[in-house]
Length: 342
Image 1 (cartoon, rainbow, N blue to C red):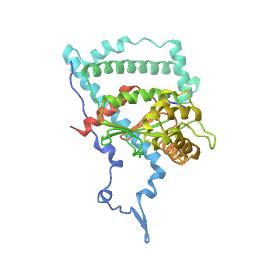
Image 2: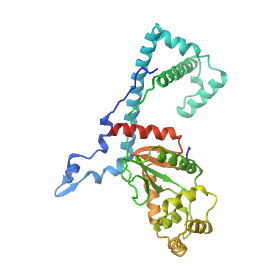
Image 3: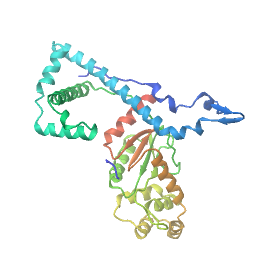
Image 4: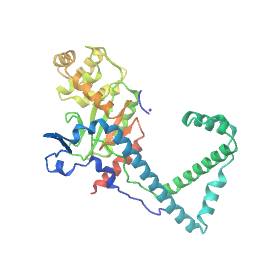
């Protein structure tokens, strides 16, 4: 959610072509960018037009990833089904019938009503189109769902691992706000709001991840404050930056999350005092509003990257939106580590 929500085989597939668009081209690798077009003596470079279509390109790459993932999952399911049927001495169709199809019951009226509502909202189908054909389609969907649940059981039993990653985006970060091994090859950039309850959930998850993958990952924090702050009034993001001026950014960051109900200048001062900061310097910094342009830059970058709520994460460029379970983060991190090799 976010603020505004006995093994048969191990499958390892790396599709390098998926990431072609984000790898430097030959000219970039030589340190000299070559134009992609010229108008007389005027050169046009990729940077002159790619930003305008970045969102569309990302959607295309996401569709490509989803097609590849679906094909990969189908290939895995076929191999698992073949192996299990051979083991039990039955045909594949007989196995599916006994373990999935035979367990499906006719749709209830509640299920029909729910499906009708979903179709009206999602596809605009009129009620007159609902009849025997609709009931047949709904039954097929239930059979398919039962089969998918059975395939999932087989995948878990076989210890299947998929190393196909979604498309990535390039995300910059402030080197002064990095926690963990500065030389770690896995960078987790977090866009967050100190007052967001879901961000507090993610705060605990991130701490666990940094501990589990100690030395292998680093966290970079960027501000995406969703609640407006009156002009001239310092917010939590401002206070954290001012603490950072005195070398206590992460200590202050932790205090803000662990005391979310304490907001305002008095609370900010109490946190500064608890960390033994130079209070005069801290208060002068707060009143100056010197970090507001940088905070706004973080906010605009988060929106440009497609974030509409907090928290949002980019793990080596792979996006993850919301306070997801720790296992979801681990899946991406483990895949990245696998692809990097020993």
